[in-house]
Length: 273
Image (tube, rainbow, N blue to C red; front, side, top):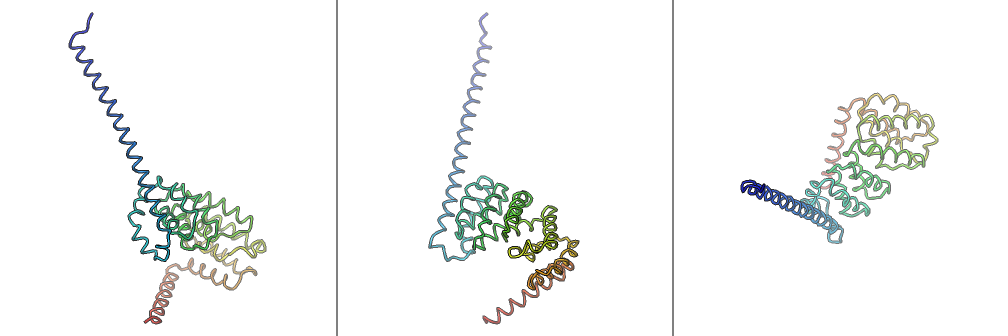
């Protein structure tokens, strides 16, 4: 039996709806593809802008001035988050450049765990670029727990070869938590038992510095044992005593620090006035 006009009409409408859906999906896909392409082009443009700062024109500029000049690009790269990480870590291959330093600052803000291996590799170089080193250290601290496994692995390896990476150690010991704390305690105990193994390459005062940040006063007796180790120098003992004092009375210690800073500022002002 031939379909009635009502059935035919309904089929035409349904076919039309399906065609519209197909066209709508195609348009949506085209629009999405265009959006992704625009996003990637904008990312490339921002990376190129950062590289443009590595010229003689900007070499002697102050950090504050560079930050203002690149402010909008920095903000947008932070907002791009993980999408920007791969391009940003490429800039870490050349230290003593504004692009490298700003890339690290952006990675610190975005806190993407994917950046951890590149930040560790950067600090392993032991570059003299203290500004970038410090920023990379803080970036790893701010990324936090995701940084711990690779940092711990690298520190164990470097200690086996008697290498001391100041900023890597600062990054790891500056992450508050049981794993960094336990490792710090373990190494400090080993230092007390066998100080000869650590002679000439290890810095016990620096290594124990972040016990203050860990805020664990139960480590004080252990630090007092370190003071009795014969190989510990006078300057190291002085730093260790400061660490102990900061743990025993954090409020008083902080007050002393503030007063010292004020005295230094007043002295500097008098010298230049």
